[in-house]
Every structure is written in C-alpha cells, then in structure tokens.
Picture 1 (cartoon, one colour):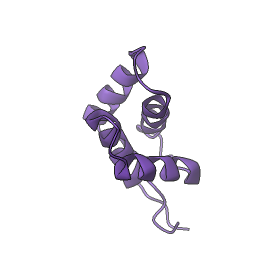
Picture 2 (spheres, one colour):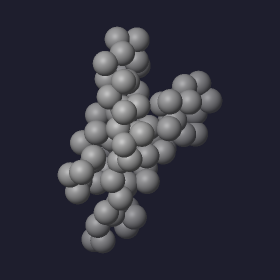
Picture 3 (cartoon, helix red, strand yellow):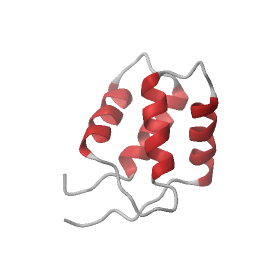
Picture 4 (cartoon, one colour):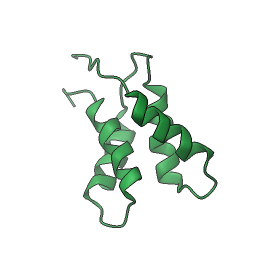
Length: 82
C-alpha cells in the first residue's frame, strides 16, 4: 500500500493543541486534534476509523469550522489506497 507522506502543518498543530487544552471542545474535535498531532513530524498516517469520523464531520452541518479544519487535515493524511 502506498504511504501518504503528508504531515500536519504548524498552523493545524497549533489549532489541535488549543483544541485539546480547551475544556469546552467536543469529544469529536478532541479526537481529530489528537490524530492531527500524532501525525506531526512522525510519518504516521490516518487510520480507517479516523477517516470515517473526519468524513462525517466534513459532510455534517452542525460542526464548528475549527473541527472541520482538523477533519480536513486528518483526511489529507489518509492512505490514498483505502
């Protein structure tokens, strides 16, 4: 399977860090933030479960813009063969 070598940008990493530190962040936002941070300078790529979650967030209408931004980053780092 081809490996996706994209990594989380510093801007998204900052957003993810702020999301994890904010007690008001939803569990969905926290999950996406943790995934984005795990992919910062690590060579890891998004797993199938996180791909599904990120896809649902991007197609949903009730998620915050920041949550959608995290979801987009997570999906961009997904395995393209899946």
